[in-house]
Length: 454
Image (cartoon, rainbow, N blue to C red; front, side):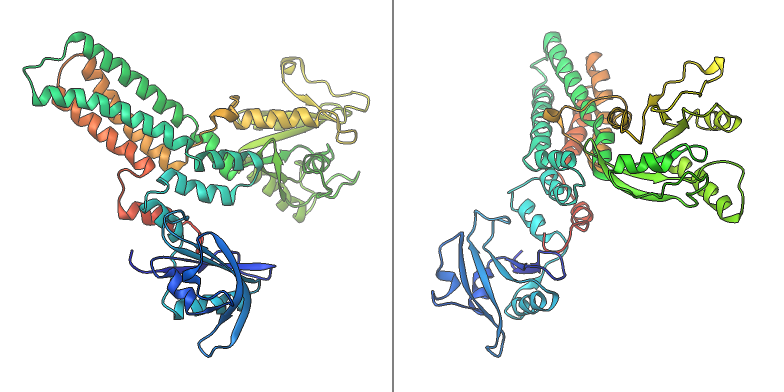
């Protein structure tokens, strides 16, 4: 890690400013060679100070007037000497300043290399490094809150506590192997087994947040389905809060699927407005109905809309049977009009939400239901919003797989060497989550998903 890296840390394009970030042992020497100010060389400036000056190219021509921030180790993002150049926004200016940094001795940073250095230098662990990207890519305030908690070390602390508890158990077992004359008493065996039971339970609780974590990061897709003219497009507009879908009294207005995203109770939701399902009247409507079926099949959740002001029909019956095994919310729209919809006697127990897209009645209740079903009817406490990702989930599953047989053997008070080995493997796997045990391939996979400059 002897080389010094540089990259543009702001999105490429026109803007008020662009930031070029430099990190490494030669960071200050590099800006000495290209930054001119009445205050002298940047290498003489105090840490965490900002200075006005100009960036000059090789021919001593002014590239731009900038603000230079000097950050001295170890109190920096990477724990190395750093400098950040705030130049005017724009593709050419930012690239020219970056090119000058490279000419003066920096190397172009790889994706995520600044954060990777922060991890390798011990400032953050692996879960916090991953949380950086979660913060950047958060689509809702709730996802952002969960990412910030991970960045502050909420998951790290829980995992590290479990690691230390496992280490204590392993120490007792290893002592028995090293000093066999010192028998482990049945009482101590029972205490170790009880502690291991608690550890496995805690791991399973963390694993149970995998689905919620995926939902907050990636969101869910919700298809709005039903027969023509029941108010599907009106419902989509009501959920979005904007007029996105065309609404008319003519059945079959929507011929294609229309997709739009919204923040529903902190969940990123992609709504799909579909063509009304009926016997197609023309090629275009036939294609639209086929797309409706595909949206229903591939979506995470369906909202099946009925018109409460119209009698129950064979089409309604067919759709009810088709959506019977799908994750579905049934909605009775137009509740502000006289009710004519009566379900058959054998369907009287169907749960449905009464709404009016015209008055807005019931829309808030529907949003609550979308949240509840998305999280499998379980509510996440904001105080315990430790939401693991796919990598964490895979590691937790492997750890639990190793530790459960160890617990079984421990309850039988046999096989100390085997138990010790199983716990050691489980300990190593848990260490992967926070980066205590890593491989170069794992780090490359994780940080390759980062943007350059972060």
